[in-house]
Image (cartoon, rainbow, N blue to C red; front, side, top):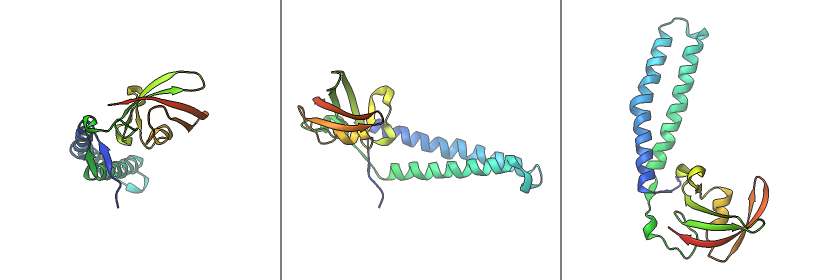
Length: 157
């Protein structure tokens, strides 16, 4: 059974646009590269042909993955979310208990994660550690830099 992906309407739209680009632009371009390389003669020693075939395989794998995400996605609206505990689309203010630094993150699906925009995946160590927590609770999260303790200050959307 495929995993359900919870996405914003904007995130689903971006995935569909990416899928359309891969199917209508990238796929024909790779097919043209393969045809061009095939026309150059002996395929057993044709590096261009091998590279184009490999690129085609990787593209088809990516198309399949994105189609699966789109087919198994559920659109969620942050306005409908309960803010009593951290969930997907929660905008969470947390405090690092070691240095007192406060950070604000929005928990999103893996495909919408963008650290520069303060959007972290619910499947990341930080996202997993925050899920289900309530304001005032603390959580210990294993990060690449070691174990860190955070306090949940506020949950919004």
